[in-house]
Image 1 (cartoon, rainbow, N blue to C red):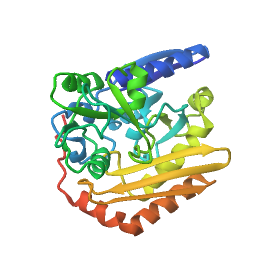
Image 2: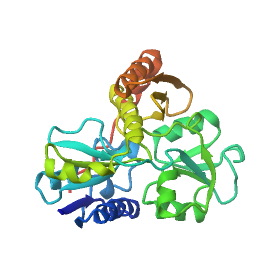
Image 3: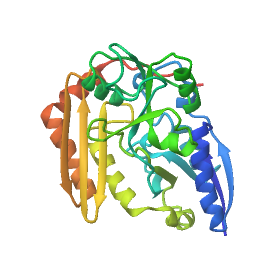
Image 4: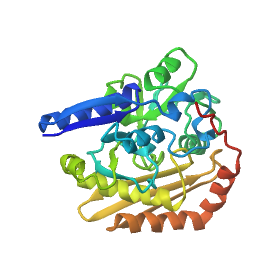
Length: 311
């Protein structure tokens, strides 16, 4: 059996994910080491993610470790992994997906509808902000950064009336106490790849690829391929007001796509079915662009982005 080195961010959730994959590999007889790598996204905690002008902000330093052969594979939340990888890398496996939907968390309110007028909701995601504002234009949305524990603590301290987080991370960490509502994809479309883990390796590393093959979950991979194809067609990274959610039933793929203005004044939402994930994602992406998405994304990309200083 092989000795495999996993590169991971150091957050609580990232380490859970890396250790989860490590445990599965050890069950198959492999020896596994873990290397913690601090990424650009981990170093910039005082700027809303939507204003940080870099793609791959949670992956760049880990990919450098792959190139340098300090690690053999990287475990990512797939929604953080750019849709276009550099030619040196590939997604070797996509594991079975956790719940991809977003969760509404609050100490005092049971749902978004129960929030009082002008309640303060925390999220750093333009996608969540836009869909929230479309549902409740009166809400005040403010940035919320930090790891899951930090975000929960800020809510518990009363800094926010409610926060929106991914169900997957909360479930994985067992931090479900304050979940009041799971938001259906039809009203709060998740990010492409949300809830799925992507295992990244060096392109053509056949030995490592062979060892990771058992981690692939075909229905999840098909769903995520459709979502990422849509996101790629729109030219978006993980911090733009774009949602994509696919469900695979037999040969049928149902794909929801959303592009929205950050203020929630316009939400373009469409559902399509198909059996080829990439073609379906590209077709729905083009539809969204041609029906108002292009103008929305021009506005978003046109806003000045804060480019972080490199350490």
